[in-house]
Amino acid sequence: MIFPSDQIRVPQPDGTYRDYAVLALLGAQYGQLESVQGLGMPPITIMEQRGPLQHGATALDYRYGSRVLQLVISRRLTDVARLEDRRFELVDLLRPGRSFGPGAAPVPLVYRRWTSGGMAVRGTDLVTTAGSPWVQSFTGRFVHYGLQPGAQLHIVNGADAGAHTVAEVVHDGRARLTAPLTADAPAVHFWYRSAPTYRDLYCFLELGPQWDLSRDTQVRGYTEVLRFVAPDPFWYGPEQRQRWEVGGNLEHLRFTEAIGGDDCGWFGTGAVAGDGLWYFADTYVIGGAAPVLIPYWGHQRAELQLELRGPMHDFVLSNPDTGSSLSFDYDVGRGRTVTIDLHNLTAVDDLGNDLFMYLLGDFGGFFLSPDAANDRVNRLVATFNGEAPSSRVTLTWRNRYESI
Image 1 (cartoon, rainbow, N blue to C red):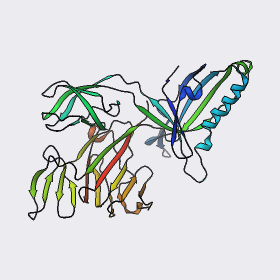
Image 2: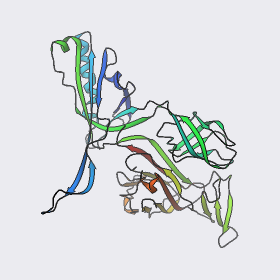
Image 3: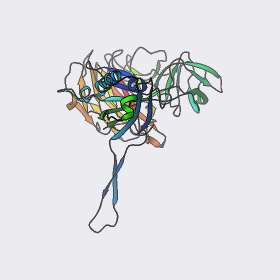
Image 4: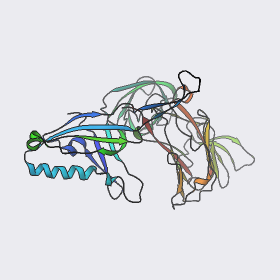
Protein backbone atom coordinates (compact mmCIF):
# COMPACT_ATOMS: atom_id res chain seq x y z
CA MET A 1 0.00 0.00 0.00
CA ILE A 2 1.20 3.55 -0.80
CA PHE A 3 0.82 6.50 1.58
CA PRO A 4 -1.63 4.83 4.01
CA SER A 5 -1.91 7.99 6.12
CA ASP A 6 -2.99 10.32 3.29
CA GLN A 7 -6.40 11.89 3.74
CA ILE A 8 -9.13 13.45 1.65
CA ARG A 9 -10.96 16.24 3.45
CA VAL A 10 -14.54 16.48 2.19
CA PRO A 11 -16.53 19.74 2.58
CA GLN A 12 -19.80 19.42 4.51
CA PRO A 13 -23.01 21.48 4.11
CA ASP A 14 -22.34 23.38 7.36
CA GLY A 15 -18.98 24.70 6.06
CA THR A 16 -16.79 22.26 7.97
CA TYR A 17 -14.59 19.46 6.62
CA ARG A 18 -14.78 15.77 7.40
CA ASP A 19 -11.55 13.79 7.13
CA TYR A 20 -11.33 10.39 5.47
CA ALA A 21 -8.19 8.28 5.29
CA VAL A 22 -7.66 7.55 1.60
CA LEU A 23 -7.57 3.81 2.06
CA ALA A 24 -10.66 3.83 4.29
CA LEU A 25 -12.52 6.06 1.83
CA LEU A 26 -11.61 3.86 -1.11
CA GLY A 27 -11.87 0.55 0.71
CA ALA A 28 -8.95 -0.61 2.83
CA GLN A 29 -10.42 -4.08 3.30
CA TYR A 30 -9.52 -6.15 0.25
CA GLY A 31 -8.45 -2.90 -1.45
CA GLN A 32 -5.28 -1.22 -2.59
CA LEU A 33 -4.10 2.22 -3.58
CA GLU A 34 -2.24 1.27 -6.73
CA SER A 35 -0.51 4.59 -7.48
CA VAL A 36 -0.48 8.33 -6.86
CA GLN A 37 0.64 10.69 -9.63
CA GLY A 38 1.15 14.45 -9.52
CA LEU A 39 3.10 15.02 -6.29
CA GLY A 40 6.00 16.83 -8.01
CA MET A 41 6.21 20.25 -9.62
CA PRO A 42 3.17 21.53 -11.51
CA PRO A 43 3.42 22.34 -15.25
CA ILE A 44 5.40 25.49 -16.06
CA THR A 45 4.77 27.93 -18.92
CA ILE A 46 7.63 30.25 -19.89
CA MET A 47 6.20 33.53 -21.20
CA GLU A 48 8.12 34.74 -24.25
CA GLN A 49 8.22 37.62 -26.70
CA ARG A 50 9.40 37.51 -30.32
CA GLY A 51 10.29 40.43 -32.58
CA PRO A 52 9.59 40.33 -36.36
CA LEU A 53 13.30 39.78 -37.18
CA GLN A 54 14.28 38.00 -33.97
CA HIS A 55 15.70 34.50 -33.94
CA GLY A 56 14.51 32.53 -30.96
CA ALA A 57 12.63 34.42 -28.24
CA THR A 58 13.06 36.68 -25.22
CA ALA A 59 11.95 35.18 -21.94
CA LEU A 60 9.69 37.53 -19.95
CA ASP A 61 8.28 35.58 -17.03
CA TYR A 62 6.81 32.22 -16.04
CA ARG A 63 3.52 30.89 -14.78
CA TYR A 64 2.54 27.64 -13.11
CA GLY A 65 -0.48 25.87 -14.53
CA SER A 66 -3.14 23.86 -12.73
CA ARG A 67 -1.92 20.65 -11.11
CA VAL A 68 -3.49 17.27 -11.81
CA LEU A 69 -3.40 14.68 -9.02
CA GLN A 70 -4.36 11.15 -10.05
CA LEU A 71 -5.09 8.10 -7.90
CA VAL A 72 -5.50 4.55 -9.16
CA ILE A 73 -7.45 2.38 -6.73
CA SER A 74 -8.73 -1.17 -6.67
CA ARG A 75 -11.27 -2.85 -4.43
CA ARG A 76 -12.19 -6.51 -4.08
CA LEU A 77 -15.68 -7.26 -2.85
CA THR A 78 -17.40 -10.56 -2.23
CA ASP A 79 -20.94 -9.83 -3.45
CA VAL A 80 -22.63 -7.70 -6.10
CA ALA A 81 -25.01 -5.99 -3.66
CA ARG A 82 -22.12 -4.60 -1.63
CA LEU A 83 -20.41 -3.44 -4.82
CA GLU A 84 -23.49 -1.48 -5.86
CA ASP A 85 -23.76 0.11 -2.41
CA ARG A 86 -20.09 1.04 -2.44
CA ARG A 87 -20.52 2.76 -5.80
CA PHE A 88 -23.16 5.03 -4.34
CA GLU A 89 -21.10 5.92 -1.24
CA LEU A 90 -17.94 6.80 -3.14
CA VAL A 91 -19.69 9.03 -5.68
CA ASP A 92 -21.74 10.72 -2.95
CA LEU A 93 -18.60 11.69 -1.02
CA LEU A 94 -16.65 13.06 -3.98
CA ARG A 95 -19.45 14.57 -6.13
CA PRO A 96 -18.74 18.15 -7.32
CA GLY A 97 -22.03 19.35 -5.82
CA ARG A 98 -20.32 19.40 -2.44
CA SER A 99 -17.81 21.95 -3.76
CA PHE A 100 -20.01 24.07 -6.05
CA GLY A 101 -23.05 25.17 -4.06
CA PRO A 102 -25.66 27.55 -5.51
CA GLY A 103 -24.78 31.21 -5.04
CA ALA A 104 -21.63 30.49 -3.06
CA ALA A 105 -17.91 30.50 -3.73
CA PRO A 106 -16.50 27.06 -4.58
CA VAL A 107 -15.26 25.04 -1.61
CA PRO A 108 -12.55 22.61 -2.74
CA LEU A 109 -11.73 19.16 -1.50
CA VAL A 110 -8.41 18.97 0.34
CA TYR A 111 -5.94 16.21 -0.39
CA ARG A 112 -3.78 16.07 2.74
CA ARG A 113 -0.43 14.33 2.47
CA TRP A 114 1.39 13.50 5.72
CA THR A 115 5.16 13.49 5.94
CA SER A 116 6.88 10.64 7.74
CA GLY A 117 8.96 12.41 10.41
CA GLY A 118 11.64 10.73 12.53
CA MET A 119 14.68 12.56 11.12
CA ALA A 120 17.24 14.26 13.34
CA VAL A 121 17.24 17.97 12.41
CA ARG A 122 20.44 19.77 13.40
CA GLY A 123 21.60 23.39 13.41
CA THR A 124 24.26 25.72 14.75
CA ASP A 125 22.53 29.10 14.87
CA LEU A 126 20.12 28.90 17.82
CA VAL A 127 19.86 32.21 19.69
CA THR A 128 19.06 32.05 23.41
CA THR A 129 18.41 34.87 25.88
CA ALA A 130 18.99 34.77 29.61
CA GLY A 131 15.70 34.72 31.51
CA SER A 132 13.60 34.09 28.40
CA PRO A 133 12.00 30.83 27.20
CA TRP A 134 12.04 31.99 23.56
CA VAL A 135 14.62 30.64 21.10
CA GLN A 136 15.28 31.61 17.50
CA SER A 137 16.94 29.89 14.55
CA PHE A 138 16.90 30.92 10.91
CA THR A 139 17.68 27.37 9.79
CA GLY A 140 15.60 25.43 12.35
CA ARG A 141 12.52 25.05 10.13
CA PHE A 142 10.47 24.23 13.21
CA VAL A 143 7.05 24.18 11.47
CA HIS A 144 8.36 22.67 8.23
CA TYR A 145 9.69 19.65 10.11
CA GLY A 146 6.74 19.31 12.47
CA LEU A 147 8.24 20.35 15.81
CA GLN A 148 5.32 20.08 18.26
CA PRO A 149 4.57 21.18 21.84
CA GLY A 150 5.84 18.50 24.19
CA ALA A 151 8.75 17.54 21.92
CA GLN A 152 12.37 17.79 23.06
CA LEU A 153 14.73 20.44 21.72
CA HIS A 154 18.30 19.41 22.54
CA ILE A 155 20.88 22.16 23.14
CA VAL A 156 24.32 20.69 22.52
CA ASN A 157 26.74 23.25 23.95
CA GLY A 158 26.86 26.14 26.40
CA ALA A 159 25.35 26.81 29.81
CA ASP A 160 21.90 25.52 28.76
CA ALA A 161 23.11 22.23 27.28
CA GLY A 162 20.58 19.43 27.64
CA ALA A 163 17.03 18.50 26.63
CA HIS A 164 14.34 21.20 26.83
CA THR A 165 10.60 20.71 26.36
CA VAL A 166 8.87 22.77 23.67
CA ALA A 167 5.78 24.70 24.79
CA GLU A 168 4.86 26.54 21.58
CA VAL A 169 6.02 26.89 17.97
CA VAL A 170 4.93 30.11 16.26
CA HIS A 171 6.85 29.94 12.98
CA ASP A 172 9.80 28.26 11.28
CA GLY A 173 12.32 30.36 13.18
CA ARG A 174 10.81 30.88 16.62
CA ALA A 175 9.72 28.59 19.46
CA ARG A 176 8.99 28.87 23.19
CA LEU A 177 10.27 26.40 25.75
CA THR A 178 8.53 25.48 28.98
CA ALA A 179 11.23 27.10 31.14
CA PRO A 180 13.48 30.16 30.70
CA LEU A 181 17.11 29.71 29.71
CA THR A 182 20.09 31.03 31.62
CA ALA A 183 22.55 32.40 29.03
CA ASP A 184 22.75 34.94 26.23
CA ALA A 185 24.23 33.00 23.31
CA PRO A 186 24.12 33.78 19.55
CA ALA A 187 25.29 30.53 17.89
CA VAL A 188 24.17 27.53 19.92
CA HIS A 189 24.27 24.01 18.43
CA PHE A 190 20.96 22.13 18.66
CA TRP A 191 18.97 19.22 17.33
CA TYR A 192 15.45 17.81 17.50
CA ARG A 193 13.50 14.92 16.01
CA SER A 194 11.13 15.77 13.15
CA ALA A 195 7.51 14.64 13.46
CA PRO A 196 4.75 13.87 10.94
CA THR A 197 3.21 17.03 9.55
CA TYR A 198 0.92 17.75 6.62
CA ARG A 199 0.86 19.39 3.19
CA ASP A 200 -2.56 20.38 1.79
CA LEU A 201 -3.60 20.57 -1.86
CA TYR A 202 -6.93 22.29 -2.65
CA CYS A 203 -8.59 20.51 -5.57
CA PHE A 204 -11.79 19.46 -7.32
CA LEU A 205 -12.80 16.07 -8.69
CA GLU A 206 -12.35 16.11 -12.48
CA LEU A 207 -12.71 12.42 -13.30
CA GLY A 208 -14.66 10.11 -11.03
CA PRO A 209 -15.40 6.38 -11.04
CA GLN A 210 -16.58 4.99 -14.39
CA TRP A 211 -17.58 1.51 -13.15
CA ASP A 212 -16.64 -0.16 -16.43
CA LEU A 213 -17.54 -3.83 -16.29
CA SER A 214 -15.47 -6.82 -17.28
CA ARG A 215 -15.48 -10.47 -16.31
CA ASP A 216 -13.13 -9.79 -13.39
CA THR A 217 -14.77 -6.60 -12.07
CA GLN A 218 -18.24 -8.16 -12.01
CA VAL A 219 -16.87 -10.80 -9.64
CA ARG A 220 -14.00 -9.12 -7.80
CA GLY A 221 -14.94 -5.42 -7.46
CA TYR A 222 -13.42 -2.52 -9.36
CA THR A 223 -10.25 -0.75 -10.44
CA GLU A 224 -10.75 2.99 -10.93
CA VAL A 225 -8.87 6.18 -11.69
CA LEU A 226 -9.75 9.30 -9.68
CA ARG A 227 -8.38 12.52 -11.12
CA PHE A 228 -8.36 15.80 -9.19
CA VAL A 229 -7.49 19.21 -10.64
CA ALA A 230 -5.97 21.93 -8.44
CA PRO A 231 -6.30 25.45 -9.94
CA ASP A 232 -4.00 26.58 -7.12
CA PRO A 233 -1.11 24.15 -7.79
CA PHE A 234 0.80 24.65 -4.53
CA TRP A 235 0.92 22.46 -1.44
CA TYR A 236 0.35 24.31 1.85
CA GLY A 237 1.96 23.58 5.21
CA PRO A 238 0.51 24.34 8.69
CA GLU A 239 -0.34 27.91 9.67
CA GLN A 240 2.38 30.12 11.12
CA ARG A 241 2.04 33.48 12.82
CA GLN A 242 3.73 36.60 14.11
CA ARG A 243 2.10 38.94 16.63
CA TRP A 244 2.70 42.53 17.63
CA GLU A 245 0.95 43.55 20.83
CA VAL A 246 1.24 45.84 23.83
CA GLY A 247 0.62 44.91 27.42
CA GLY A 248 0.46 41.66 29.28
CA ASN A 249 4.19 41.02 28.98
CA LEU A 250 6.14 43.77 30.71
CA GLU A 251 8.62 41.71 32.71
CA HIS A 252 11.48 43.09 30.60
CA LEU A 253 10.39 46.74 30.71
CA ARG A 254 13.36 49.03 30.00
CA PHE A 255 13.43 52.81 29.80
CA THR A 256 15.30 54.05 26.73
CA GLU A 257 14.75 57.77 26.15
CA ALA A 258 12.28 60.35 27.39
CA ILE A 259 10.38 62.37 24.80
CA GLY A 260 9.00 65.73 25.85
CA GLY A 261 7.64 65.09 29.31
CA ASP A 262 7.81 63.23 32.60
CA ASP A 263 4.96 60.84 31.84
CA CYS A 264 5.93 59.52 28.41
CA GLY A 265 8.92 57.95 26.72
CA TRP A 266 10.32 55.02 24.79
CA PHE A 267 10.35 51.70 26.55
CA GLY A 268 11.56 48.29 25.39
CA THR A 269 9.44 45.27 26.34
CA GLY A 270 11.80 42.69 24.86
CA ALA A 271 14.35 40.62 26.69
CA VAL A 272 17.19 42.46 24.95
CA ALA A 273 17.74 46.17 24.35
CA GLY A 274 15.90 47.40 21.25
CA ASP A 275 13.64 44.34 21.04
CA GLY A 276 9.98 45.35 21.24
CA LEU A 277 10.25 49.14 21.37
CA TRP A 278 7.08 51.05 22.24
CA TYR A 279 6.22 54.68 22.91
CA PHE A 280 3.92 55.11 25.92
CA ALA A 281 1.82 58.28 26.24
CA ASP A 282 -1.37 59.12 28.12
CA THR A 283 -3.85 57.40 25.79
CA TYR A 284 -1.94 55.54 23.10
CA VAL A 285 1.08 53.44 22.27
CA ILE A 286 3.16 53.47 19.08
CA GLY A 287 4.97 50.26 18.16
CA GLY A 288 8.16 50.33 16.13
CA ALA A 289 11.92 50.07 16.36
CA ALA A 290 13.73 46.82 15.61
CA PRO A 291 12.36 44.67 12.77
CA VAL A 292 10.98 41.21 13.42
CA LEU A 293 13.05 38.55 11.63
CA ILE A 294 11.04 35.78 9.97
CA PRO A 295 12.72 33.01 7.96
CA TYR A 296 10.56 31.66 5.14
CA TRP A 297 11.12 28.05 4.00
CA GLY A 298 8.51 27.61 1.30
CA HIS A 299 9.29 27.34 -2.41
CA GLN A 300 6.81 29.98 -3.53
CA ARG A 301 6.27 33.32 -1.81
CA ALA A 302 3.76 33.28 1.03
CA GLU A 303 0.47 35.14 0.79
CA LEU A 304 -0.49 36.78 4.07
CA GLN A 305 -3.48 37.47 6.27
CA LEU A 306 -3.58 40.22 8.89
CA GLU A 307 -5.90 40.66 11.85
CA LEU A 308 -6.02 44.14 13.40
CA ARG A 309 -7.67 44.43 16.81
CA GLY A 310 -8.74 47.89 17.96
CA PRO A 311 -8.40 50.48 19.14
CA MET A 312 -5.84 51.18 16.40
CA HIS A 313 -4.96 53.67 13.70
CA ASP A 314 -2.04 54.57 11.44
CA PHE A 315 -1.09 50.94 10.86
CA VAL A 316 1.91 50.40 8.57
CA LEU A 317 3.70 47.15 7.74
CA SER A 318 6.86 47.09 5.64
CA ASN A 319 9.29 44.49 4.33
CA PRO A 320 12.53 46.27 3.41
CA ASP A 321 13.97 43.05 1.98
CA THR A 322 11.36 43.01 -0.80
CA GLY A 323 10.95 46.80 -0.95
CA SER A 324 7.23 46.62 -0.24
CA SER A 325 4.93 48.17 2.33
CA LEU A 326 1.23 48.60 3.02
CA SER A 327 -0.87 50.73 5.32
CA PHE A 328 -4.44 50.81 6.59
CA ASP A 329 -5.87 54.34 6.72
CA TYR A 330 -8.77 53.62 9.06
CA ASP A 331 -9.48 53.99 12.77
CA VAL A 332 -10.32 50.54 14.13
CA GLY A 333 -12.62 51.02 17.10
CA ARG A 334 -12.27 49.48 20.53
CA GLY A 335 -13.41 45.87 20.46
CA ARG A 336 -13.54 45.77 16.67
CA THR A 337 -11.43 43.42 14.52
CA VAL A 338 -10.46 43.90 10.87
CA THR A 339 -9.25 40.96 8.77
CA ILE A 340 -7.08 41.78 5.75
CA ASP A 341 -6.64 38.92 3.26
CA LEU A 342 -3.83 39.65 0.79
CA HIS A 343 -4.63 36.54 -1.29
CA ASN A 344 -8.27 37.41 -2.01
CA LEU A 345 -7.60 41.17 -1.62
CA THR A 346 -10.30 41.83 0.97
CA ALA A 347 -10.49 43.90 4.15
CA VAL A 348 -13.57 43.21 6.27
CA ASP A 349 -14.36 43.98 9.90
CA ASP A 350 -16.18 41.68 12.31
CA LEU A 351 -19.48 43.44 11.47
CA GLY A 352 -19.15 42.56 7.80
CA ASN A 353 -18.24 46.06 6.57
CA ASP A 354 -16.08 46.20 3.43
CA LEU A 355 -13.02 48.36 4.27
CA PHE A 356 -10.79 47.52 1.30
CA MET A 357 -10.82 51.14 0.11
CA TYR A 358 -8.71 52.06 3.17
CA LEU A 359 -5.93 49.60 2.33
CA LEU A 360 -3.02 51.39 0.66
CA GLY A 361 0.39 50.48 -0.72
CA ASP A 362 1.67 47.20 -2.18
CA PHE A 363 -1.29 45.10 -1.07
CA GLY A 364 -1.08 43.08 -4.29
CA GLY A 365 2.65 42.45 -3.91
CA PHE A 366 3.31 42.18 -0.19
CA PHE A 367 4.56 38.72 0.76
CA LEU A 368 7.18 36.70 2.57
CA SER A 369 9.91 35.66 0.14
CA PRO A 370 12.30 32.69 0.09
CA ASP A 371 14.76 35.01 -1.69
CA ALA A 372 14.80 37.80 0.92
CA ALA A 373 18.34 39.08 1.57
CA ASN A 374 19.76 35.86 0.07
CA ASP A 375 19.18 34.08 3.39
CA ARG A 376 15.38 33.57 3.41
CA VAL A 377 15.03 35.99 6.34
CA ASN A 378 12.31 38.65 5.95
CA ARG A 379 12.75 41.64 8.25
CA LEU A 380 9.27 43.03 8.92
CA VAL A 381 8.59 46.36 10.62
CA ALA A 382 5.10 47.08 12.01
CA THR A 383 3.98 50.41 13.48
CA PHE A 384 0.56 51.50 14.72
CA ASN A 385 -1.12 53.74 17.24
CA GLY A 386 -3.12 51.85 19.83
CA GLU A 387 -3.84 51.40 23.49
CA ALA A 388 -2.48 48.89 25.97
CA PRO A 389 -3.46 46.16 26.49
CA SER A 390 -6.14 45.86 23.78
CA SER A 391 -4.41 46.70 20.49
CA ARG A 392 -2.87 43.82 18.59
CA VAL A 393 -1.73 42.86 15.09
CA THR A 394 -1.53 39.18 14.11
CA LEU A 395 0.11 38.12 10.87
CA THR A 396 -0.56 34.57 9.62
CA TRP A 397 0.73 32.60 6.64
CA ARG A 398 1.46 29.08 5.38
CA ASN A 399 4.52 27.80 3.55
CA ARG A 400 3.73 27.20 -0.12
CA TYR A 401 5.52 24.27 -1.72
CA GLU A 402 5.90 23.57 -5.43
CA SER A 403 6.57 19.88 -4.72
CA ILE A 404 6.47 17.41 -1.86
